[in-house]
Length: 267
Ligand SMILES: NC(=O)c1ccc[n+]([C@@H]2O[C@H](COP(=O)([O-])OP(=O)(O)OC[C@H]3O[C@@H](n4cnc5c(N)ncnc54)[C@H](OP(=O)(O)O)[C@@H]3O)[C@@H](O)[C@H]2O)c1
Image (tube, rainbow, N blue to C red; front, side, top):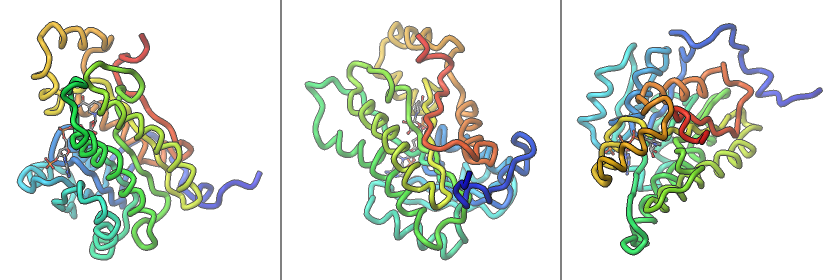
């Protein structure tokens, strides 16, 4: 057996995640100002990572940074809808602050619109953030001088990429696209020692979920809740799955979609 050199050189983990699991790693987390991104930043810092927290709202990014363990974390406000600028921005970040060993793309938009009210501009805006920005983050990371191997990218997919829901077709399409790009990018980036995986959560109690709730009747919301045999998730439930996919505990996993949904999709 020959094997890929960058894979065989990656360290063999001796135990499960502890406070050194991500020591000396710099991880860029988008969506760090809220919900799953914020919870992820907090957990990754507890596992020893240095965080580059990205979002548009600087004040809320600072609130995240204030909750992080360790030192050296950075807050970098950036509007990811400027997709053309992402690779150059990442090159500058790495030149100024050192190479990255991971990217988590947790910035995302949800859209609940019946088809008769759905506008192409809204679909385009959502795809731009949920899909194109993710692809440009991968493009940015793979550049010479931006990453050191072993590196890992984790995209936020959703159970909505696997099942249908009336009135949510644009969001579902974007998450299906995230799953498809995860598999292809995993193949494309494996030779460089970059793993690419996604986490597909069910309903987690965050601001995004709160906004969705506003569009539902209490009966509709209760029905969604009942479809999760383990109840609704907490942001930390998803953060733990992301941490696993960033650390060497998952060194032989790439191109996978890890479902974290309290049993939603087993019906
Ligand atoms: N919550 C759930 O139940 C659930 C379930 C399945 C999948 N997901 C997925 O998980 C991810 C995170 O969800 P969440 O619940 O944490 O959402 P959230 O609380 O609404 O947070 C969304 C994040 O995206 C950032 N963002 C939005 N537009 C941006 C832009 N143009 N540029 C940069 N950042 C931008 C926001 O930061 P700023 O406002 O500071 O820009 C915010 O930090 C999303 O991809 C979502 O689809 C969530």
